[in-house]
Length: 57
Image (cartoon, rainbow, N blue to C red; front, side):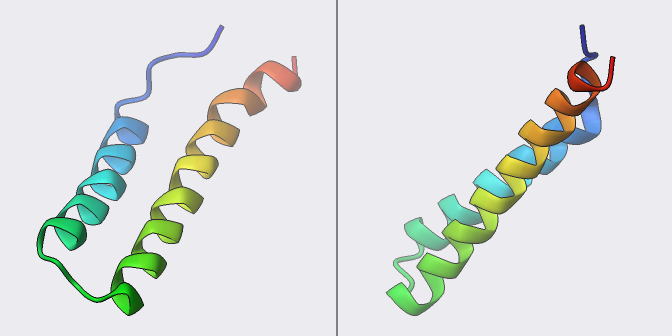
């Protein structure tokens, strides 16, 4: 199927880490919500990048 791309792991962990830091720092909602949605967009892009080679075969 698809390979285990280490760069995608780094992107996923960085996105999750950014959201975790913002939440643990008790930042206001004005900062937390956009950070969460940016993390969500990054995670969706990772899923699409993993599924795309399966669709093109």
